[in-house]
Image 1 (cartoon, one colour):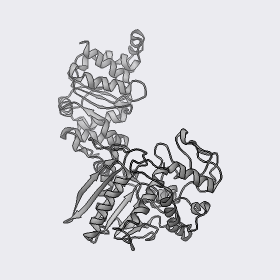
Image 2 (cartoon, rainbow, N blue to C red):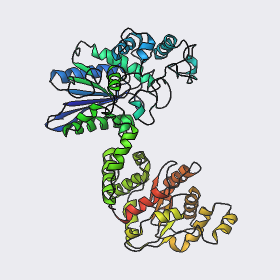
Image 3 (tube, rainbow, N blue to C red):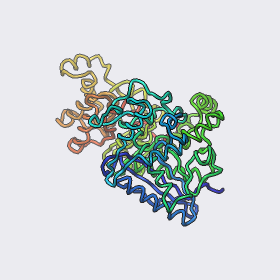
Image 4 (cartoon, rainbow, N blue to C red):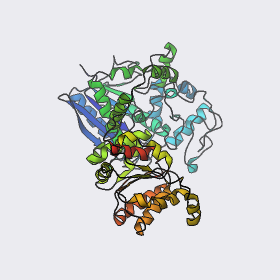
Length: 516
């Protein structure tokens, strides 16, 4: 099977105004196909846009000289909503006119200092004579034509492009400042890509999808530029590499793998249900995001007809997706099943970076369960989440929250019922597996009791209390004092947690893997 490309460069762009590396800065990854295998050639974090474009020009000229076709994906918009160029009064009202205008107007220094806010203000002046459609800037840089807050009305009727209407959570290109916005990256990115198209080493070799190729893979260039949306693929970082670096590496490999099996072709088609008028708008003015397809209604109908129905198929597919989106090699062998199960329970691979555990915790917990130890839980919801048929030794599951003595004990101690209920674990606590999925006070009370010698030591504490008050602090206390109390632990750092995640960790220990 012939691949469309031989190499893949994915770029995570930045509009920073000073040189910057690390998180929230420019990252790019280059992967080549060599001998049928995908090989990572470069994963770099240049501090400035000037340095990044120099790197890209070097890589692209080298790849072109070796006759290798390249897909370059960039995570900013390649176009603006309908009628932007006309509203700006450009002679060329296609995408090309906008790219030329931004190339001419944007000034970007070698130190990342740039004039994007001034350009946006000038565009607003031409389009509306007031503060819109562009908005978002530091208060110190507000002018008569650009404000830090969104104007009451957008002078343009089109807030979003057609493709953006098919992506949930995306922000409009008009917003220049704020978490998750891409307006500044778009202005700076388009200006630099136009410069790349004019580079003497690359001139005539670059095509911009879908503007110069149509919504198709039939007329791609030796070098093809495409707009990407990294959040289409959920990734998480378990090491020192920031999420931006993980994303470009994952995206480059993802597109390479799809290309290798012939599945990349369809991503260039966009939404095949677009009308002819809409297709012309996309191909001449707005652009499209690689991989975005059907509108929400059509997609919903397809899902209704194709969703997985059998439990084994669902869990097997879930495990495949988790292992594809997160590198579980950072967990020791005994913990991998537990981590996968916890991630699966909440449907968010980002929790993977917050799973913490002491050495040998999973092994010790599994051994205790195999010995028939009791399982002590803070709330009934955790108890209900434990799959009894996984408990081969019929381990008793004990919750004392609703014990008749608990309310009085809580009043006596001046604490919550969840914490007071721990007082009645005494006869079961030694060698037990404790699972806390709700109350930070229960975890605090347990750790304090063990530290004071008031409570016996369990074999393992699975700690996933959830909430804004005390959840993070109680888990950090457990981690910090784990050696002092000499009890193994598995926990989820931060505010996240809950009964389902806590029970999932226990279920994974009771029976390896996701099998039912």
